[in-house]
Length: 83
Image (cartoon, rainbow, N blue to C red; front, top):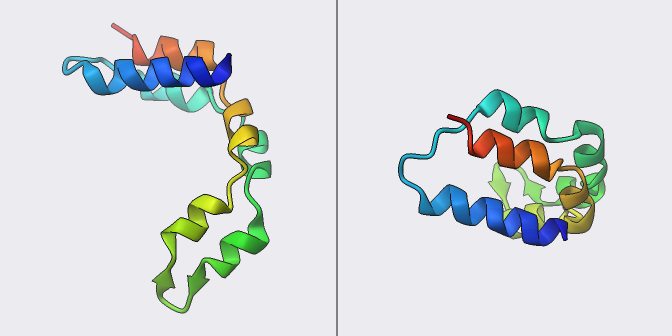
């Protein structure tokens, strides 16, 4: 259900030109502890070699299910539909 909500939020966000976003509420919609826990720090560190960053490895270092669970979709939707 959360995946559907996130897809809906993203669709609204990218399809509406005059969308007012409350960035404060949007920030508050993320549980930072859960979001941080979704990152495998060993994989993330391996994605950086010197000054080179392998962005695919950066993305792969995130457990997508845990990352989705860190978002309060109701708050995020309210933030994206702010007047």
